[in-house]
Image (cartoon, rainbow, N blue to C red):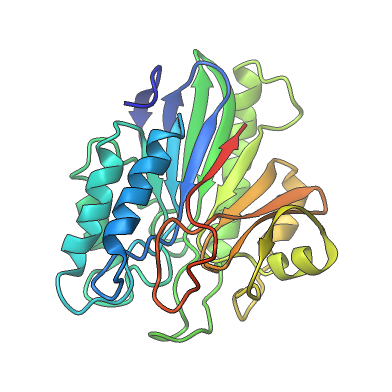
Length: 294
């Protein structure tokens, strides 16, 4: 056990509440790509263990692509990753990557799989807004809301195995705005000290403005070794993020050779460090996890 003082208070259709003692620590694991095409898959499992052991996290955000396309027993390979994460008795919140439901296992089969794990707090969310796994995690100190993490499905490719990526839907943007408005009310009622509830957004595929952020913004730490692979269509969720002024950090994965934090229009754009080895990516890319304290 690497953390104490954590208790999942309740789960419902709107949000999950986690009780924390002080600051909120969220560990991001992303793009483990643990499967039969990965000749370093055992190293990936060892890496996951070590990163979690040293994190002292209140929650683990698993931001997709836990497995790549594997023709045999894909669900069993995924379970090997999930088994390790769940064994630490820390709440963990997954969002889908572009490869996870590409073939053999769909998102609702994964949802059934997640229910088998006592520490997984995945929620399918509303079925009519786009995707599966749009949900919110609220962190409280006693009755006072300290922070919230918004988990969002960024879908897959526009067609199987394509590198043209689908986009966040308008229904998801409407849900995001509705969620922030409701959280603001709960936050103020709980004695929140800021003008708006502090939140972070966790996704797999970077939103379109990542490309602008890493061309025009300020790089705070780390480096990018490949281009930002963003959706073909920009539905401008960033406009809502700016207007609501709640989300001050966005976390994604997807681009394995990128691991950095940039600042753009007052919002931190974070590329989580890849948490495993993926075929055809250089071994000299940083590997591990991304720990954020809020």
